Image (cartoon, rainbow, N blue to C red; front, side):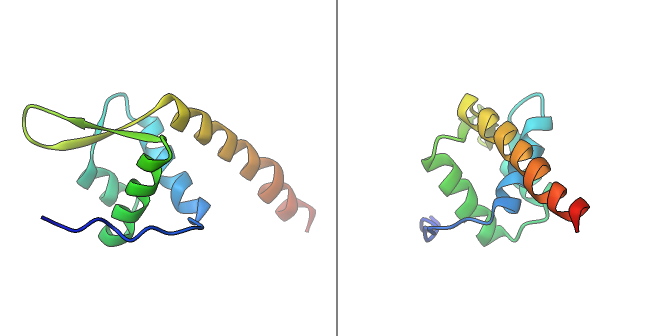
Length: 99
């Protein structure tokens, strides 16, 4: 059984945004492997982010009858995604346009 990923204090918000965005676009829970590949994140890094997002209530784990774990965006995760996108659009993109 794999050990728990090492926690971290300051996640990269662009990675969080990529994971949340991919889950946002799904109509149903997504396989962990599919999410990891779709977001192009190294497996060890992916595990750390999923663990962090789960601890913060942004994602939930759906254990299906087929034995595969799928991730689902929680209501808190949906709100976090909306706020993160809004912040990126207001702060980052505005700064780039103003440069």
